[in-house]
Length: 479
Image (cartoon, rainbow, N blue to C red):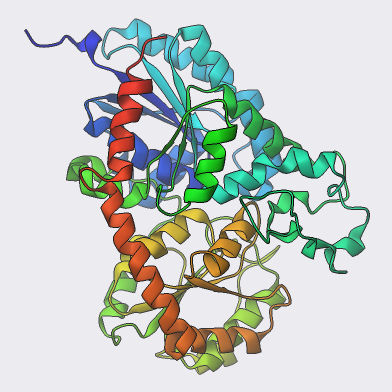
């Protein structure tokens, strides 16, 4: 006899409402769906509308067993949201629980779909643990960070307790204090204070993001399991330390982007998540460039530059004489539009392409792309690895400094721009990456990691087996 609808497992997936969180959660949901689960994927009303605007409303119809639902974040339509991160975090904790509970009640009483049997939510949305306990289903927390980035958050309470943060005064940001070594974290040799999550760089003992990240990291331990978007072979030492010290099981499942593309049907893979409209002309432009000649520049969905920083990057790229694609969001520059001079535009004519957004995975996989100037966000770092593209790193905030440190010092796939940010340094690093000996070394190393990442998602690979284990040991387990 076949199973009834009620017997089919049903995972409700709730990402934090930011581009860098939505993408990996969607890929994880697709993977779980590929193992026979019904999926309800929950975005905020605002996020859903942004995706519909950028991708077209018809793209968000979902499938009969992969449904897209929304809840309110309680913020006004014109609120800056991800660019006002503390307010968004506070709104999520305050305004998400009630509508999410109601949604689960409606799902379970509808009779149209199987009842919710597990919850998969962001590691920063741990109020869902209480909801899961009330419903009587397991809940897992997806951390979209690297393992080393997560371990930075894990040690924030120690930094507070030992007096490293809050900073004594603003001078600590520039007098060398951030170079203080943290020799009491043995699994992270040579780590300095500057490598820890950027939220520690405050003089305010009540800094919201410092306490939000500290508290949510600790609360995640109560979940049935943690999922990390990394693979075992890449961050072995940190993962071993985590498994030894944390009270809940850990499953690595990376790279989620390529894993989902490899394992899921095309129909599911076409469910969009972009908050900005993609410019497909990028790929046509790349078709006319030499193999490995183009540097791709993108600082992600959150970074905000000053006009000075914008111009230093612009003229560094221009003087390098290398062809480039530069993604400049309309909100990339602090307090104003991203306006570049006519002199710069004339200088880079035929060599530079500037656009508002693109399909980053497709651009990085294009044969003409030979380097990536990045904010070192974790999704971008993984996409760079998966496509064998070395990086120049300019970390902006959160755990990006830790990603940068490991990319440059541990994994051997990147070079770091100093905090001073001078156009001459940008020019020199771009030249070195694209034509120098260091660039060749980084390219060779990242290609090795590319092959390791591919092996992890294949049948019998570490991530493939961890997905099977997660489903059998946690998601299908009744409380």
